[in-house]
Amino acid sequence: MKRSFGSVYLRFNLSHLIFWMVSILVISIFIGYALYSTSFWQTQNHLNTLADIASQLLPSDLLDYQHNAGNTELLAAHMDLVFANEPNLQWVIFSPQGDLIISSYQNTSIDTSPIFDPEFEEALTSSSGKSQKTSQNAESQTTLYQSIRIEKDGQVLGILRLAYSLYSPLQAARTSIILFFILVGSISIVVGSLSLITARNLTIPIDAITQMADQIAHGDLEARVEISKKSPEMAYLGQAFNQMAERLKVQVTELRSFVANASHELRTPLTVIKLRIEALRTGAMDEPEVANRFLAEVESEVDRLSRMVGDMLDLSRIEAGLTASQRTLVDMAGIFQDVKDTMKVRAERAGLELICHVQQGLLPVIGVEDQLRRMVYNLIDNAIKYTSRGGKVELNLCASLDPDKILLSIKDTGFGITPEQLPHIFERFFRVEATRPRYGPPQGSGLGLSIAKSIVEIHGGKIWANSAVGKGTTFFIELPVIKE
Image (cartoon, rainbow, N blue to C red; front, side, top):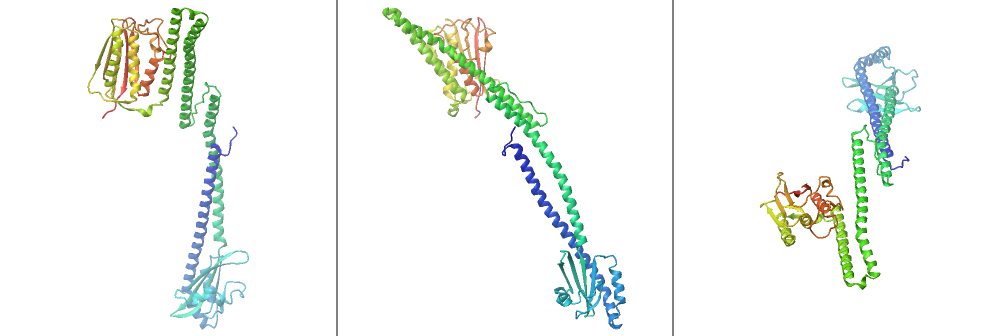
């Protein structure tokens, strides 16, 4: 797959690389500064210690030097003894007037005029009697100078100046920094490689999911991703994608089935209407009795079409949740009683006994009142249609075994439903007229139970039915209640 600049793979690697480089740069600067500062500080302290040791020996030597008319052998011997292990150090002793007394430099012309050096004057006049400075030569080599006043009993005898080359101490720091960079470079290569491997392992499942999503978008509903076992997160993502694809396949299959069934259901009344109109045009209009019968059939089929289209629209709206914002606290006992009163006249006309039992003090349900009312109406209407004269329809509303739910039941004494057909009764357009006689008005849209099931499910409940041929059918609905 071609990767753009904004891809996860490139962004992951670039972000890690930039973060690593910035971190290394900051750490390197800090460590380099720390190493140089430490080396300089250690050299400075060491030089200061040497100057203190020499300053304790020199007063007696300088007094002897003055008494022995300029004999410097004792001075040289003591200086060589103190600085024997310091190959990087050079020393010079001046008189208080700035004249050279003795020096470790082979070229004695060097440093014979210290009066122009600020540290000489500072060591001579300051209360501490010490002074330090650093300077660089033409080869950019740094030297640390330490000057200390030599005195005894308040008498200034001379100035000792030490010159310590910082090349070797700082070279050790530079070597440490180089080794540090080599180590960091090696670690960077390892980290970069691990980052690439991690990014690749991360993006391979994402690429696979992207490809499968593209296949599904082009109509391949069987496309599924292989579950990655390298990462629990990627495995979970793959499982979620496959579940989504499976649900999409089911929904598309249901939609195609719905469209096919709807087309079939609409074709029948449209065919009847077309045939009757053709018959009327070809002479049936001349026979009033036949014409009136054909017109009544056309009107009946138009009403059936209207009901079917209305039910399909309502079912789509319910499943899409378009009325979810209309939810309120609903008293199911009131709905049961209202629907029972509405259907009472129809039940009497059909020669049926309509019985209603409602438990008092039930908690309310949160939902869309019109939808819940329609659910109860559809189930009672269905029971009346399939119950013969002399039978009864019994309505019950009570608390469920689950204290957070209520239980509704609609029981009829009709013909019942066969065990083979019972699992399919909530499917769209499914009818059992072939084996189940009906005693109500002409057949409906075949969507009544599907609508009832959708209403129950979007309200967080469940619906099921028990039936025995020759004994009747009972529908049960369980709905969650709101505790006050």
